[in-house]
Image (cartoon, rainbow, N blue to C red):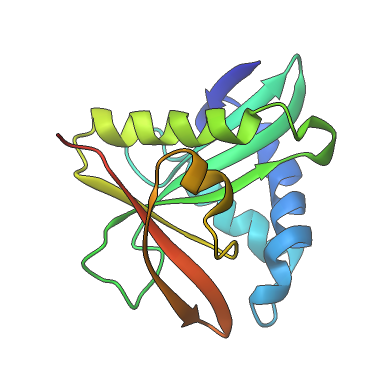
Length: 155
C-alpha cells in the first residue's frame, strides 16, 4: 500500500469525487458530481490545507482522507478536522481506514496542531473510538445526528 497526497496524483480527483458524491452527496441540497469534483480540486493545494491523502494499491486508488479547516460552522473555535475518510468496498476490512486516519493525524501533529476533530454518523464512535479518539458531544448538524470527536495531538 502506498500513500500519496492528492497533489501527487491529481488524476484521482474524479474517482474520489465519484465516491464522495455517491456516499455523501445526498446530504448537500442540490449537490452534483461536478460540484463535488470542483470542491475536491481545492485539495490540490501543494502547501498547507486543505489536503487529502490518497491510498493506492499498485495503481488502483483505494482510499482517501482529508485534513480540513473548520468543517462544522457551529464550532468556529475548532479549527482542524479529519474528514472524508473513505475506503473502496473491495479494500475494506484491511485496516486501510485506520492507516489513513493515522496519516492525517501525523501530518496535523507535525504541523503542531493542538487537536484534530471529526464528525461521524456512528454515534458509538466506531473506528475512531477504537483508535483512541474521544467523544465531545452528539449534535444535530444540518439535519443529521452526529458524534463530534477529538484527538489531542500535544502532550
